[in-house]
Image (cartoon, rainbow, N blue to C red; front, side, top):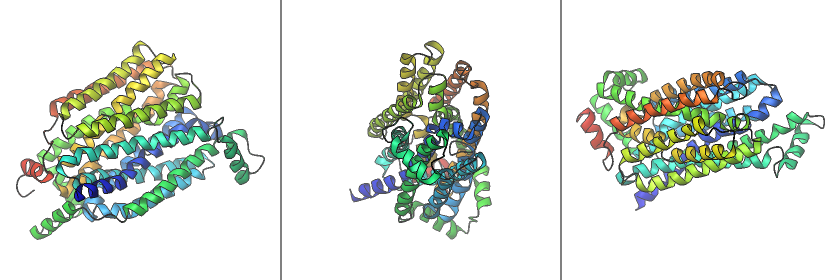
Amino acid sequence: MSNSKGSLRSTIAVSLTNYLDAGAIVAGASGLTLWQNYLGLSEVHLGWLNFISANCLGAAIGAIIGGFLADKYGRKFIYTYNLLVYMLGVALIICSVNFPMLLCGFLVTGISVGIGVPASWTYISESSEVNNRGRNICISQMSWGVGPMMILLLGMLFAPGGYLFGWVEQVAHTFGGATLSQEAVHVFSSRIVFISLFIVAFIAWNLQRKLDESSEWKAAKAAAKERGEDTGLFHAFGVLFSNKTAVKTVCFLATIYLTWNLVASVMGFFQPHIYETAGGVSNEQANWMNCIQWAIIVGVTFIVSKMIDKTSHKAIYTFGLLVAISAWLVIVTIGVNGRAGLWLFAVLWGIQGGSSPQIFYALWGSELFPAKFRAGAQGLMFFIVRGLSAVWGLVFTVIYGENGEGFTIAAYCMILLLLISLVVGFIGCPKTRGRTLDSIAKERYGENY
């Protein structure tokens, strides 16, 4: 029982990384129109913000670095320093007065997010009991929902017309003077939301730097030293790519996660903007809809957390993707110009988020690789996925158009991507439930893995 409580405490501390990851994406998304009006940005500018943010390239760069650093120097190394980088990036966004400064802030924040994510999923799995591993991954996923939900609530309270906007105006004029333009005052609501992320990051950094090192990583490191193995970063890459089982696993996991994430990354960053332009609702209404959707994600994930260590992974995985495809079929049949279609889409996308491929990517990604290159493999895959998602974000803005005129075409693209994720995941679903990480590694990589 004490071990179970210990793993739960460490899971919660590490899961704050996911809160900050999703929070950074949604904080940028919820204030996107405000920054656009303040700085006079075009849709192309918005595409570049998405391209280098925690949603895409920034996280991709961070992941490839962080994954192999976590395998080389330990999971605790990441938790000791990484969130200091995150706070720097958020501080740049808070103080931004032009597009290059905002772009730089998004990039630094994104790199920090990428560094932390592979280590967090790896650490959670390595510190979990066999019968709680799926539950703990789901808890980490719930924080991915709680973060956006809280950020959106704050965004709505501080947004123009929100209950606390009067206070925002006072803060804006205190720091910017009485002659600030209306757009400059409005964007202060986004600045304050990012201040909340800075505060949570500081709290998380203090909790995470006190965590114990992963015992599994220490054992793997000791075994490598005893065998006289090279533990350098380039050697880790070599080992990963020279092992056929590892390469096949990378291809499988990258495929199911990439095809889903190409859809999810667009929704994570552009969803409020899409609701406003294609759906025709106000910024406040768009944020409310998005907030309710995230609440649904958290609720469904909680239900899945109670089932995932006892129920067929294939069944849960298939259910989530069928719901995801149904959500996008709403776009091409009912459309989102009316409130009924818009709300049905939001609810269905919320349900799929609670049982999405990201849960299984995080779970299987930590189960299907040995400890010596577990985080590195996840970092590599995260790099591939978020990097290609960055490119797709730019392509999406072209397909979507300035006012959402290409949204139906984009929907067909999304359905195709989700179908690929469904088929590949259904066929390749591994049987790891209820097994130790050690037994899985021995079966896949031999006794001296």
